Amino acid sequence: MLKPEPNEIKKPTKTLSGITPLAVMLPPRKCKHGQCIYCPSLNVPQSYTPKSPVVMRAMRVNYDAYKQVKARLNAFEAMNHPTDKIELIIMGGTFLEYPKKFQYEFVKGLYDGLNVKKSPRDDSAEPSKTLKDAQNLNETSRQRCVALCVETRPDVCSEFIDRMREWGVTRVELGVQIIDDAIYKKIKRGHKVEDVVKATEDLKNAGFKVGYHIMPGLPGSDFKKDLRLFKKLFSDERFKPDQLKLYPCQVIPGSELEKIYWKGGYQPYNKEETEKILFEMFKAVPRYCRVMRVMREIPPDYLVAGTTKIDLRKDIEEELRKKDTQGCTLKNILLNIFTRGKVKIKEIRYREIGFVLRDKRNLDLNLKLKITKYKASNGTEYFLEIVNKDDILFGLLRLRIFDVKRGNLNLKHAIIREIHVYGQSLALGQKSKLGQHTGLGKLLIKEAEKIVKENNINKLSIISGIGVREYYKKLGYVLEGSYMVKDINNKKIEF
Image 1 (cartoon, rainbow, N blue to C red):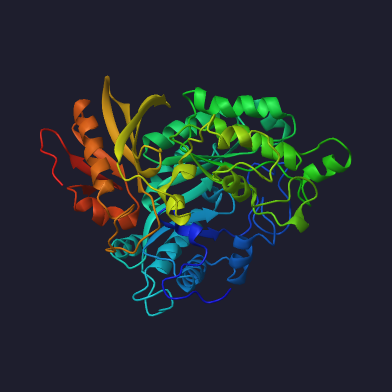
Image 2 (image 1 turned 180 degrees about the horizontal axis):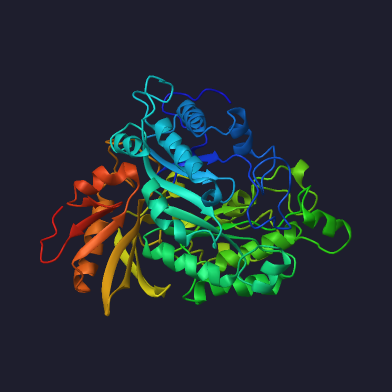
């Protein structure tokens, strides 16, 4: 890669959503439940290959958490990306099944990697003695952890909520794949739909953002079933995830599914079928949900069967954003419907301001607040958005209100599960006229506090990444346990 020019950002899409995502990989370890039939056995973390980019980076440093963070910070620095606001993502399997001591040491290594004194290349910072010390240092360090994500199974989740909050986790991704017990049994998944339901509610009540990994094209399913069950995710109040990753099933060497495939017992979706199911799924995603990723980063030489194009989303979105639909390269499959305005994509990522700025499209700056209220997981969700007339998204907030049992009483509890202002990620203190650092976050919190007061609730909690605590302190919130909390009863809201 050529060295970027001054003020040039290489691969700008990586930080267009307002944060710098930094993925680290866990060392290989077999799942306790056994092995799903689509997972390979390649001496790397299950469901990954030796040539997956994040695996290759981790293998170079023997999966050391501290060294992985340092290496990625160096890479982002070389591309001129800001590294002030980092979202750490722990990948590679069910982290909550690893030995407890390893878990704490791994998480501490992540914070130690961020807590450098001057720059990512400065090795003068000494590792902290304890995880708590590392977190305290990160509250004001140059590279702050604003969010921490853990991937896990739905059945290995609820009992570890307090532990995840101790680590500073703010987002949990569940390997849901499909909500069908018969298919779970067929693919040897090892859990049931009821585990998905319980994990989803427990996580939301604790303030986490909840993401689902969905895998269309599994053995035992078909196009109609995939689409019906996908739509159920948003029509059934027991589910309604905040985020999605859409990973169509592929046949990978070393998996049990490979043997079934060669015997003629399974056929994955081809490219055209994959495009079609993804388009239909995008149509069904509501405005409060973000599609984080489409397709796994599986190199073509590690695919026996299935779609080989890993950047399919990029092709689709480029076509969708075209003003002139003539000459579209993708085969209709609803593209003309989308681009001619008959169906509007509502999912979050497609509407973010960062992509408008990147593409230098016209941008209306008359902003308004939009609130979507919906029932989910035995609670009420308020999805607050700052948008313009074209529905371009500048910022959002997720507020949840639910009942907590105290003896014979049901008490209402309010918690903000996410605050996010979009646009190209900026350094802390850097000023902007659009997107980040323009006061939109404060405005959203103010509106959330109004809703909480209208519901006669005295306190409002915010789940907070370690590196965001200082921001909330300035708005009158104090640390209680692992949450930022404010008593808003009968108090004037000022900013």
